Length: 149
Image 1 (spheres, rainbow, N blue to C red):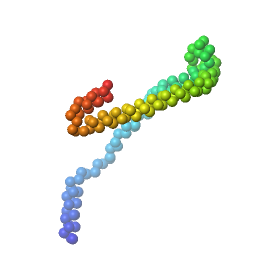
Image 2: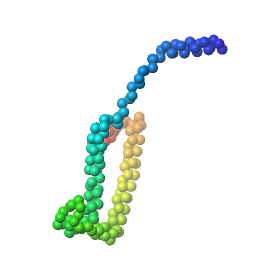
Image 3: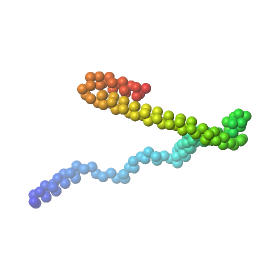
Image 4: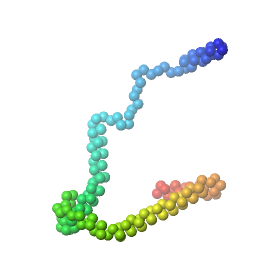
């Protein structure tokens, strides 16, 4: 037992000699989001502007939907309409049967198309995953080429 302890101590000494000395004054890893204050302000302004550009069209459509048809005909599209109206929503409420039928067709086409597409992709990928498939490389290239384009 004493011999094993001595061997362990010798190994520890050898390992200790091979270790690199600890670094004095550890360097801080550069942080990706650690910009200077001026850069932070510039980035915030830029991202705020881009956010407004993304949200503005949706707000504009909502405001236009509350404009009257006469106001749109005489004044055109404005950010703040001269005359407010809920006629567009009354029209949609009166046409709710047609609207629901249209949504139904949209949902059915989307679900059926998605199921068909996933099935075809699964069959195609199964075929090209088999190493015994003779034209595996050509079909893989074809799938990759059409994904890129």
